[in-house]
Length: 244
Image 1 (cartoon, rainbow, N blue to C red):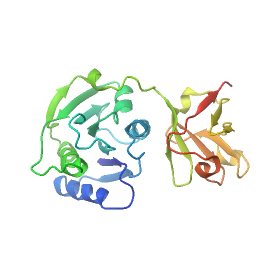
Image 2 (image 1 turned 90 degrees about the vertical axis):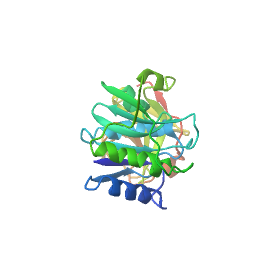
Image 3 (image 1 turned 180 degrees about the vertical axis):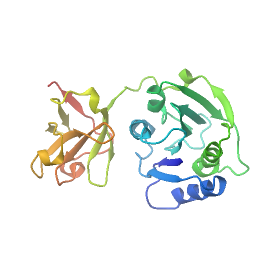
């Protein structure tokens, strides 16, 4: 399958235009629109989000991932990554940092192929979608193998103590894996302190808490409320971990 992971938003033509290319170039391959609202113009936050969700998908899934504020800039390279049996196609701007860092087996290619039509502002449609379709058809990456160590953003932490996504319900995901915290840890963010609860029903309505979400991330929630609005959270809000 081909999995879409973008910051294009749920409205507008962009996801649909990429889907049109994929359906023509790889007919019969299932498409899954995982995120259309990944952290906007924020490859670093998106990298932690992508790594948390990629493991739900089968081996040989092709992730067409486009969070690309540097589109058109020759300094950022288009790339293909194969990490633990899954494929990732998109910009070389740190977006694949965490899936690469956490993988046991990694191969990296710079995409050297160029289509006849390549706009300056929409490489998702013109470059990355055709390459993702090729790989989904079983073809080799159209590029040059690169040393993986040269592509890593080594200054980034293994776990990011920030809010990286706020969902439809107002729950705020962080870049922290819950396995890195003690269940007794208290989190401090935006002037609020929150303790852990295992489920929403474990606290009264209107009470903020943190919990391990279904993909292993630390998530801030308010039972039957909107944590983003109630606590004043946004993408990038820092999180401090108090000692248990």
